[in-house]
Image 1 (tube, rainbow, N blue to C red):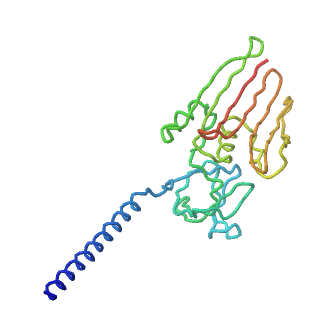
Image 2 (image 1 turned 120 degrees about the horizontal axis):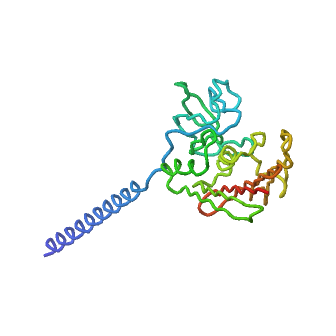
Image 3 (image 1 turned 60 degrees about the vertical axis):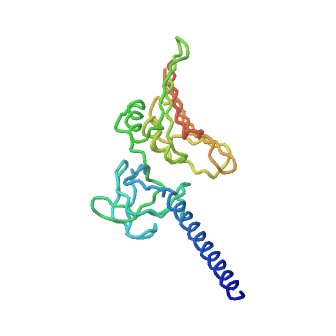
Length: 253
């Protein structure tokens, strides 16, 4: 009788242990499935140079290594490998040295001067550029409106770029809305209010200036003002919920 009781107890214990083991295996498999279901971040296959004077391709991932080439503004470069984190700041732009390929030559370039948005073509209109950009980035939004008075009509063009990067917005606005290339991207660190003058104003230009608004060393607004006889315009860049807002308002008088 004792033997039977012991056998039954042993069988029950074995069954309990086997059940626990199976439950543990099920939980582990479930955890693996959940982990594997998380999508990995995708890296663009190619990006575009936004540096006005061109971007240096270097032999190693540091700014002191040998120069292999200079990639002109607007050049499309193949992305080989990304750093994946910020390791340096250049001209107020955070970034790192990514491995890229240019003219069949591999090297490293500062990704703060690379953009996922292809640059506007020569004399491209904002409307046409937005239509082309929207094919790759559906959240791009463009609108235009007219207003003002008979004596001072206005035209407003607004472009929303799906990015939170101030420098991408600035370089796009610089090419699309005629911000002089003499103005560099404003450093986020500085006084809360700053005005930079265009040192290369043409004859007849009354106003050509860049105004920067900051708060605690963070950009709040960038505005370019231009005025000549009978015509003027203002380009403003701000960060909105939907992305970076680029707006140009033209005024004729």
